[in-house]
Image (tube, rainbow, N blue to C red; front, side, top):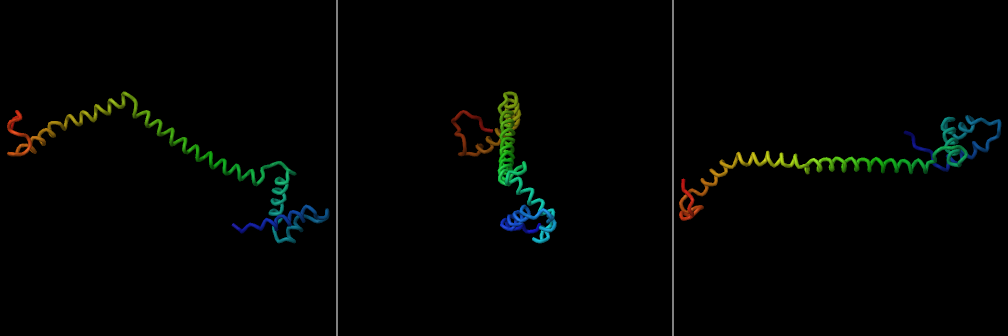
Length: 140
């Protein structure tokens, strides 16, 4: 993309184009300054909007709209994250879901309980280790 012309240059070209003689065409003014006729027409249209001659949004309004749209997009993303988090957390707090989760985890733990009991008894089965002889527990 070509480098934009300086603002002072654009303002001078617009001033000359607006104050030109009736017999001088826009193409001649554009050629004198070394720019294209369409570029000059765009600059004149934008200047008319900025000066309030024609209806439209000014550069300041466009910048404000751009920042507002960016802020809205960010807030919508944040809102979506919060909505998803709330849905996830509300599913976790449902009574049916939590009992089902507890039942499934409890069943898994209960199925491992005899195995855990055997491990514990092996650990404590040596002489002088673990449980004392007089505690009433059986030795295997």
